[in-house]
Image (cartoon, rainbow, N blue to C red; front, side, top):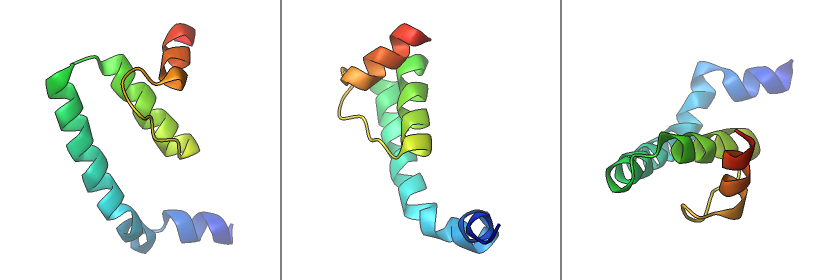
Length: 69
């Protein structure tokens, strides 16, 4: 319970602000380059849930997620 509160309370959200701004910028650039929403959502989900940053659009794990979707 304490870990949940430390991670998700409103004050803790400030820790993630710089990461959110960086990811939002990357998302906009990515959508301009290639508006493939499936690749983008796969990358965002893997980043949010697993902390994995896809290296490129042809990232092997992103391709696996696309095949499974």
